[in-house]
Length: 394
Figure 1: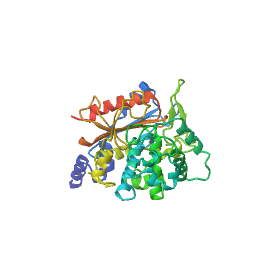
Figure 2 (figure 1 turned 45 degrees about the vertical axis):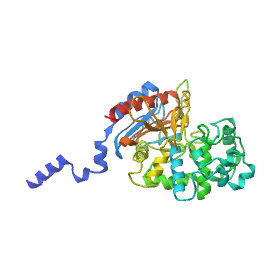
Figure 3 (figure 1 turned 135 degrees about the vertical axis):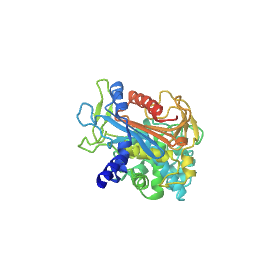
Figure 4 (figure 1 turned 60 degrees about the horizontal axis):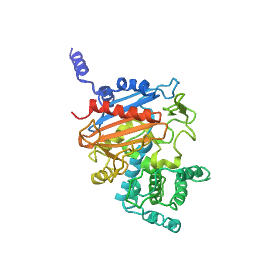
């Protein structure tokens, strides 16, 4: 009888065997029913989202197909591509190296690459690490010359990624700036690649090694990696899709399955929606949760606006259209919330991802879809409103 009463009590309050991760998983709100209508409404192959509050994931979901027209359904552990949301990781790495004394925020391009000073454009010499990370370096937004450099990078033989980026640096630093350093905002992927090359030069390691060992591993982002989210020859993750008039075109892992690998510091990371929520939530905590990768003050600097961006209503999906840019984060006030968000969007034109934080209330919302284009961007904008209405300020 006593054993029976104990069993009843355990079933009522939760056995020790059901606590921890399994219990948390059961307690977490499923977002699947919320997400499902977006697939048809916006023509999305798949959609995933998660919400974290006070350091804990309180809601998550993943619906749809890994490949449009296929049979493999996405799971909550599937990897999604986050594009330019990667930039906040590059900025955090820079902050770590500044705190360790390997670099300064005002380290210049000429100081980082003194051997190239003779071939540098005079204005480029004085561009600082801080300006590269805040898009105020004077380097123009993506243009034909930059595309040419990326294409030529494929012809460079027997080079590791850090050597390829160094080759790119040699081409880039000879180019004129479009404005004086520090004067204007221009969203420049090349600026982040150059910043990544400075980190590589300072450490003797590739940017990928630095991100994996200094961010992925300490934060336990076990699903995180680089490049196409699926494996070559397999549909083991949601494929990116190009929106076409005749329907979504799935892009298999391979040379056209993602941005060129040389662009890593500007946007090649993939990871699961749960790991993305973990990364976003760590940032939303503003240094009050382990691991202490940088000081609270330094993390606050990364999250603080450096420059107001001129409104750009026609900005490409995944690129900021208004607000104030800091270091891989945008401060933006949205009409459906009283408090501003820290935000960044990302897209490699085959996927779109949003990160939205409110550090004041320790809230993080993340959402991803495996197709590019304006309809995907519109879907995430609408989803962000619905998520916030349910889980945001009260």
